[in-house]
Length: 415
Image (tube, rainbow, N blue to C red; front, side, top):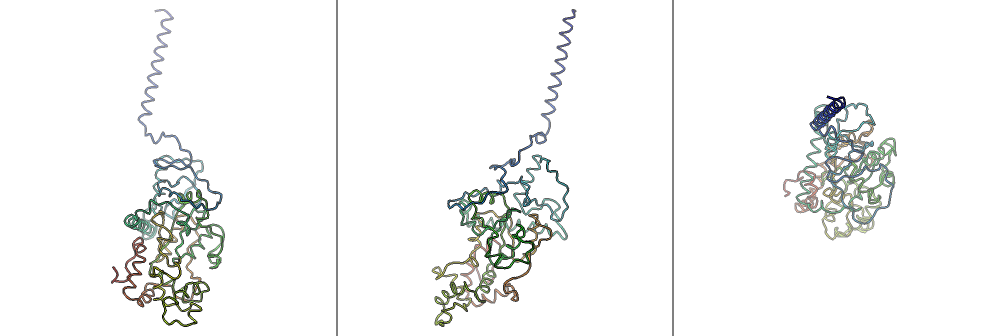
């Protein structure tokens, strides 16, 4: 065999070895878990989402509200879970110490999917199910899941068309915005709203403590922005990415609390605006003094006004339905708290949004502080002044609130 033939033979053998090696490498790669070899995703891109959104900018420029309809965002599937701002809700056990975070580390696809599931269920605690002494956090987690389940089932049964409606500025006019911790709070008067506004102002860095914020500064100042003051992009961005919460109260107790606050104490607005109209319409042989001042409205007269389809003066937020104030069948709230368990629910929520450890929900009552809070026995005494028919009609008036928030019937004869 000549030298040239030998050289060609060695070259062919070497090429064959290289080809077999390449084929083996390809076979090895094909047998690996594809999720381990998937390319890293750019920020804002999520796996297994029907609707994908780019990573929103933390500071949208403020704009004036638009008066057209706003298309409701996807309820939770399109929520942004990749941002790591101070308000990102990562629901680990609140007291669990956290290890150092490597800002340059990238999440694997499985980790991203897991975080997406956590974001979809913001009340779920992702780690130790005991959650603290006596399973306290686990109990609060289960309570949140049950409340949201009941609310969504009631909406699906009685307000199915609401979920298909477009969000308008009116639907979000009672929602207050706290951008630093990415919180949206729907105000329900007489359900702890004054103290919740204090908490939001501290979260926003507008005050150092809730104790130093006066009632008028909380309610009549302009420190907190409402969601309807943002433009269309700002509204949809916050509805889709912020943690939305509301707190509710037993409807009859809330109604009595509003009546005691507005009509049993001097009030320069409710007496002349509501009181005079109520006395003039529903009190026979009213005195000139009562007609002039509107003071001394009685609870049965107030309920007559509430139930009258031709009210002499309009509805007020202090006794309006929660369904009208917060649109819970249209806006998918992440957290539903109760006035009756305010301390536990509120402080649990503050841990979930990574509020400062020294911030807790205030207990003080800043108006008529010497007067007892309205409780179930006090509410029953007021409703005892009504006829059974009036109580039934009042229950019918608040029926959807009773249903959505799973409150029991306050009187046995109601149906």
